[in-house]
Amino acid sequence: MSDSPRHAPFTPFFVCTALAAALSAGFGGAALLAVLLGFELPLDEWWLPLVQAHGFAQTFGWLGLFIMGVSLYFVPRFSGTPLRWPVLQTWVWALTGMGIAGRLLGQLWLSHSPGEPVGRGLLGLAGLAGFLAVFCYLLLLGNSLRRAPRHQAIAAVKPFFLTALAGWLLSSTLGAWAALQAALQGEAQLDMQWHRLSLDLFAALVLLPVAFAFSLRTFPLYLRLAPPRWPVRAFVLCYLGACTLEFLPPLLFPGETGFVVQGLGKTLKGAALLAFIWNLDLLLRRKPPWTAQLEVIPEARRFHPPTRPGMPDYGEFGHFERLLWAAYLCLTLASLMELWNGVAALSGKEPPWAPDALRHLYLAGFGTLLLLGMAPRMIPGFVGARRVAYPGLVDLSGWLGMAAAWGRVAPVALAPFLPEEYPTLGILASYLFGISGGLGWLAVLCLTVNLGMAMRQRSNRDRTAGIG
Ligand code: HEM
Image (cartoon, rainbow, N blue to C red; front, side, top):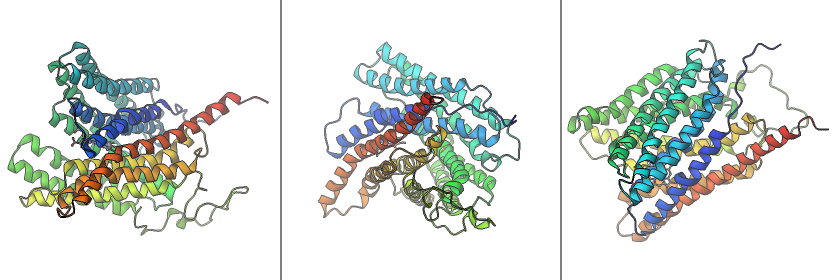
């Protein structure tokens, strides 16, 4: 009998709820917000609550639920230690879903009737549910990481996961606090500073570290990159130091000094991110692939078409790699802008790049494009399917996702630089912004169809297993 540990199967609810969050408040909300802004239509009192619900649903729902589902599947397998309480997964999923739905409904309700007990109850419970969900998730994942033997595959990327656990705790505590405070005061709008800090902490301390861990572990396999042979632990320490300088000073000593120290943090963070991208070697491909070290090249499998040049697959996942390149291109731009803003702050000038553009470059550019590329490559395998139903849809979602990210970021980032003598440029940029949310929604719809078909094929096979 095999003595390998028995792991809990993949829980598709996380992915399904992430897609639902993206198609409703996330990209659905984005489509509405962008049309109103881009085409200069009138805004209502629900505008700011909807902006906040959109930001929360995209960050904790779309990105967060995907990260939760995939890490609860992957980390125990990497570390060789099965989840101790697999049943908690259902709680994590259900509480997160309640948190996102409750936030949207509660904030919209309160924007219509401020102080209404139902709206206050919904918002308060949503805050508590989101916090409890993260608490259960940390218990599960922390336990797997703590019990992992040192030599396991997880060791090289463990510092990233530990950073992410701290990031989850900080960002969800702040988010819950802001929601409870608004519920107690009967207001639809959360305190802007705490709410934004919670979302920005998620991007810096959860999204980026988890994305880096998965990139380091899976890109050599999926894209034949070189294995990571550089001091990852030292990188994590530098990155954490830079983030501390970026986030703490404005809270501890607001004003000129805090602004300058924050500038130093941003400069270091931008430099650290560029160093990671350089070492990952996805964009420039300076290092030979790991297969170059093999003495015997594996023969092509019989009855299979030849693999794509330089890739281990046959094209059954579409051109998912384009999305990964585009994601890291966005991260390179974001790092340069972060660095630029940091240097400007250090020299006492106003940062040239708008925080909103930078935030969306991280979240809609890097995070979303990475997810649109990684999900069709990974999830079919988790549910026992060998390919996505429609590889062409992966390509389509790629083009739509890239257009959405650029349409969202470029008009805001470049607005101060557009020449005033060409007003048509400004109008075109505004229209591009206006349709970007709809493009993002369509990109997620393509992914939903592909993953839905993969899961259906699996359940059909399960149902017919043993027949005939
Ligand atoms: C391309 C599609 C998107 C469009 C059109 C869009 C649109 C918007 C708009 C109009 C705002 C309000 C900006 C303001 O107040 O000035 C906003 C805020 C925000 N968005 Fe997006 N967004 C998109 C994608 C995303 C994605 C994919 C994420 C995260 C994964 C995201 C996260 C956020 C966050 C965190 C905020 C700030 C919320 C706040 O200030 O309370 N957005 N977005």
